[in-house]
Amino acid sequence: PQKETTYKRVLLKISGEALMGDQGGFGLHPPTVQRIAREVQSVHELGVEICMVIGGGNIFRGLAGSAQGMERTTADYMGMLATVMNALAMQSALEGLGVFTRVISAIRMDEVAEPYIRRRAVRHLEKKRVCIFAAGTGNPYFTTDTAATLRANEMACEAIFKGTKVDGIYDKDPMKHADAVRYDTVTYDDCLQKNLKVMDASAIALARDNSLPIIVFSLDEPGGFKGILAGRGTYTRVHN
Ligand code: UDP
Image (cartoon, rainbow, N blue to C red; front, side):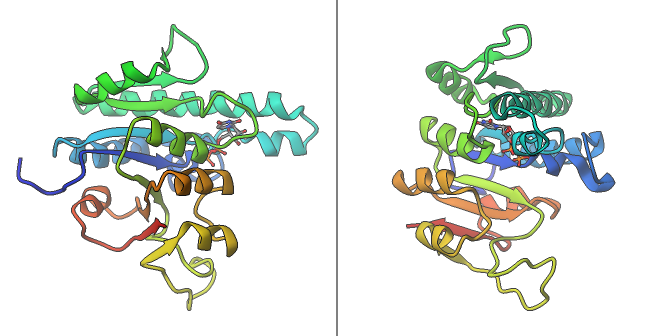
């Protein structure tokens, strides 16, 4: 294939809500899952090795459960299980497109997904299988943003691509303020100090300490993921 990108290995992080489509509220919208799978396929075709982390917020969030009286760690485990369902949905959509994948879970469930073994995951990537990392970090009190940063570091990804509804990081919510301004680049410390909505603080700190760039872009743009990898389109790059 034509040299469209210099990236060799990347991690794509999407929230669970991204799989919900515009139906709103809850759950999985298969056409939306398929649309995102095609985005991943188009990058996979370039020969880029792809890791994925998908959130679980479309099904369950630990904080929401604990706010309603559920024990926090139990609620967090439920959230982690939600990410496994999303990972399986993405696996199914990708394999439907002929892209080989592995779902790799941080919580053992051998009938459903492989356990996480770093060297084995690296081998899958080398064989051009898309690795979908499920069940977050396997620990309560964390988020899938932290899981994404952790796995991206472990897999030696060159960057995390965070697909969102908007094409980058703004000084205020662009959905609510017409005069919101997008940053081209922003530092990790800016994100933390200005409390910019990129990822939670522990994820940003983990990225900063390992100089792992975070690229925030819109997944709603058709061809967006491939375009961003080729340096087209608008996005925000978080770096030191
Ligand atoms: N979660 C957790 N540990 C992790 C990752 C996730 O406990 O390492 C739980 C947590 O309860 C979280 C839920 O799983 O609310 C779903 O993940 P997240 O909120 O990150 O999903 P997203 O917002 O990206 O859809």
